Each structure stands twice: as structure tokens, then as C-alpha cells.
Image (cartoon, rainbow, N blue to C red; front, side, top):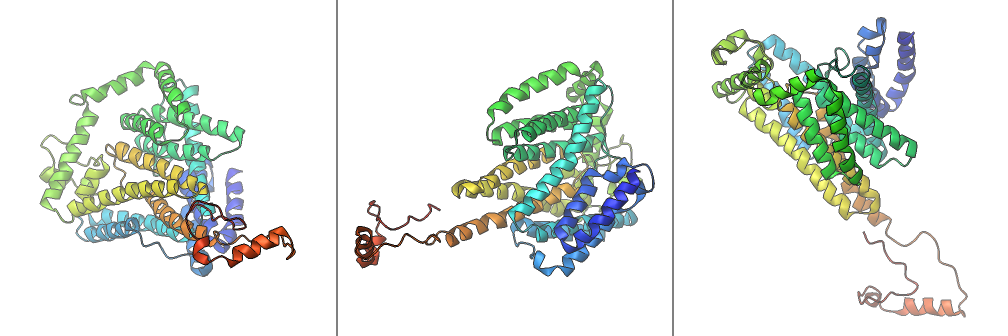
Length: 470
């Protein structure tokens, strides 16, 4: 029954995706993040829904010229394009050509939809839609995972949807830490009291879900996310009160096996998993030293010959490189790593500038400042958890960076709109008869020299409407 319902939903919405490509982009995000087909049991599980929606959206993008814009020429977009080009170039020199070509194809597909976001998100409303779909999709899994942890006493590991890009418990923890700040942004701009309470519950359960993954990197990222969230958020007093209480409650609730798992953080010399991570970092660095420009290409870590040549003597061959930074270094060389770090830095710095402009602008720009702050927290969460995980090529990261570029364009448009609306009021003043006192004042004001009216002597000129402060 679920399969048929999902099929009918797709059939009904695909024409809408063609006529309004922004709907197609939202559908693509829903299938990529929510993975509704993974909650069915029949034919719908294995259907390429993401690809189908992407094709229809691209067709609509080509057909509906008035609904798209050129990708904004911003530093973050330039760096993104350079990184894509460098990845493609390094793939030509890959040690494992077949695996590298497959990964490159997947990365190009992902980046294509990133450029679609840059072209279709042209106003504030569409930006809000993108944020809401992301929060609702990932929030579902966070809510579900947190509830599962509470109902099972924390005795089982929380995992992501099967065959998704965040199936693994570590990957799931990273994505949830990136999503919690966006939940907070939505809550800050929610006027409905009941929805506000629901969002508090979802944020709390998502934090519980991160704990329930048993991911040590996820716990570290959650702690950093919580601290950054308090620092960057407005109305932080309630967060200051809730965060320690939630941490103590979860610590008391989780079973002893969880405490034993977390206690291995400061005993990494004896922990095989931690030692394996360190060995993979050493391997990546040695590969980059031998091939400083292009590295070893995608999936260089899967080559046993490369491990025997560049890995530590006691390393187990074929282990993935558990760090976004070391993975990019080993696969794309020092140039690729420099572009990747510059891309992340451009995103964070760009968000800081958006916050500054939003504070200096009109009150209706406040949402830009809040969203920029929360996206900064998400990027820090990604960098913190990603330092221990092999996830440098996930689409959620590049979609967030695309949102940064979109926000830069929208914030720049605001002053122009303000100037357009700061002229004479569209409401005509009340007409007075020539003999009335008001009519005399109007004639008197019209008779004054122009520079006298524009002078800044501090005295308000009667009969002249003040311009808005922006």
C-alpha cells in the first residue's frame, strides 16, 4: 500500500516539478534527505526516484527560462567550480580508475543539483522552502532516532535510512548535528506556539539520537554544536538552562556500555578503531607527498598496493580515510585540499558578512542574520565531526554552501529595494483649499529653496514626509 501511495504522489507531483522547477528541487531534496522510498517494502524501494525527479527538474529548468537566474558570481561559487574542475582533473590520474570514475560521476550529479539550487532559489520565500524541507526531512529521522533510543533504553545503535548517504551511525550523527542549528533557526521565526513546542521536542530528540548512535565523533560534534548554538543564537537564556539539564539527564539515562564506549576517547593508544584512523591519516599524507598535485584520486584507499607502499607497516590495507581533510588530501593532493579548505572558509566568512549587513539593514532583514548564524554553527559542526569521518563529498554540505551564495545575492538586493520604496509616499496628502492655513503652509514650503529643505539643521520640516532611516 505504501508503494502505491508513493507512486501516486510522484505521478501527481512530477508535472508540477516540470512547470515549476523549484518544486522539483524540493522533491529532489525530500527524496535525498527523507528517503520516503526506504520506508516502503515493495517495488518502490529500489526505484531510482532521485534520478527521475532530477531529470524532470532539469527539463523544467531548461523549459521555464523566466523562473531561473544565472548562478551568482560569488567567491564561494567560483571556489566550488574550481574544486569540481580539480576533482575531475585528478580523476584522470587516479590510481583506481574504475572506482574513481564512478565516484566522479556521482559527484558531478550532486554538484549539478547544487547549481540548480543557485539558479532556482531567487527570493526569500523559496529560500525558506529549501530550509523547511531540509529541516523536516532530517528532523523526521532525528525524532525517530531519539524516540527509539528512549524506548530501548539506549541499548542499541541508531542508524540512518538504508542505502542513504547517512546510513552509518557516524554519518547519521554528523548530519543531525548539522541540522539542529537549522531547526533552531526555524524555531526563532515561528510564531505558532504549538509548533514552537514541537520544534523544541524535535531538537531534543535529535540530540538524543546523536547520543544513541554511540559515535564518539558525533558526541564531540554535538558538544561543539551546543556551545556554538548558545553563542550564536538569540534568546539564548533558555538554551543555557536546557543544555546542561539535557546533558545530565542523557548521561544518567544511557547504559553502562555507552559510558565504556565514550571512555575510550582518552585511551586512543589502546583503541583499534582510533589507531586505524590515525594510520589512514598517515597513509593519506604519504600519498599526497608522493603525488602533491593530484594525490591518488578517488578511492585511492581501496588499493592494497598503495597501502603497502605508503601505509604504516602494521596498517590493515583497504581502510577508508576517516577525515574529510585527510581524505581530500590523499585523493586530490595539496591543491585539492587548499581549494576545499578555502571553500569552507569562504562559506563561514560569507555568512559573517551577511550577519553584519543584516544587522545594519531594516528589521525585516533580521531573518538573514539568524539564518547566517545557524549556518555558521552547521559548518563548524560539519568540520568538527568530519575531522573523524570520511564525508567530504556529501550533497547536504554543498547545498548549504549554495544557500550562502544565494543569501549574499538576496541581502545585496535589499538596499536597492529600500531605495525604491523610500521615495514620496504613495498616499496622497489631504488637499486643502488655497485659503486654508494648511494650504498656506504648503505654498510656503514649496517656495523655500531646495537646499534649505534638505539641510540637516535638526528641525523637522512640516508638510514633508521623512525618509526611512535605511
